[in-house]
Image 1: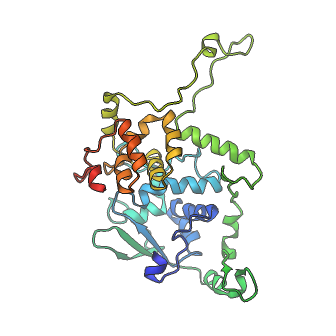
Image 2: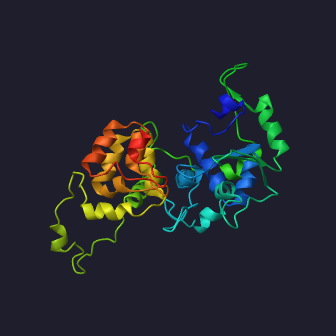
Amino acid sequence: QITGIGNRTTIADGNTWNHEHIALLGRTLTAPEKEGHRIARHLADYVLVWAGGGGDDVAKSPHLRRIANSVYRGLCREPTCRDFGFQSKGNPTVDMRKSLLYKLHSHNLVPDVQADRNRFREVFTTTYGKVRIYKILSVSKESKDWVANPVNRVCDAPGSWMCRGQYPPALKKVLSEKKDFKQLEDFNAKSDHDDSDYQREYMENVMHKKQAPRPRDSKNGQEPKEAQEQPPARHEVVKLSDEKIEALNQNWENNERTTLMWELISENRLNDMVQLLYESPDLVHLRSADGRGPMFWAHEYGRSQFLQVFRQLGVREDRKDAVGKTALDMA
């Protein structure tokens, strides 16, 4: 939309097919402001930030951080990047507060939060603050000239209009730190134990399944008999008690789990969501900081099958968000 309506070339508009590219942008936006600027000045002239609450860029930024960490390993202490987000009372974690995206999003809106005037200058903000645009200062002319030179484009044939751009040489050091990520669905790629271990740890953390190992008998090294006789996990989604549902609805916050549910609903990934609910049925009752949750998002995106599942699990449609709207108002 930015390219089509604004007639401006963008390096992110709908370009989610390239995981490594999004990881670079995620690293840029979720890095500390100074580090983010060092990368951004070789990529673009301006930064556009969706703000104003709800599903804005800060709410989605933990997912950006996770994508960045999947390619640039070590940005977070563990794959779900729980050190990048917000605490229970809505206060940003240290890494979130330092990030470029948080600075641009909350500039002059949150006490003691300002973008570095030597690196970024605010040039446009919509009436209600939904969109904020900043000019990147000290943009590298050398990188701009290099990217604009047709010689540095990779075309599918001599003289073709189909030419793939390349990152400028100034980003070589940053790019050398990446590890191309192999998706679970990429059957054409050779298996990689590092990626498999990473994905497994990621899912364990998301589902809160990581537990201490079962105790073993000090003599024979086997699990105690009572542990061996534990029944297998149930293969159905459990409906929580009314008391538990009410307790969950009292807690409103943005975190990696609300982001995950929003993604599954917006991307219409019903099977993936049901698989998660086998282990964590509480996910359907989560509420984001604006009071909305899975039922709201299912109505917003017209996901009739999701609505059926949510209703069966006791998710109410008459609960109100922060501005007094119900999920039915989103339809």
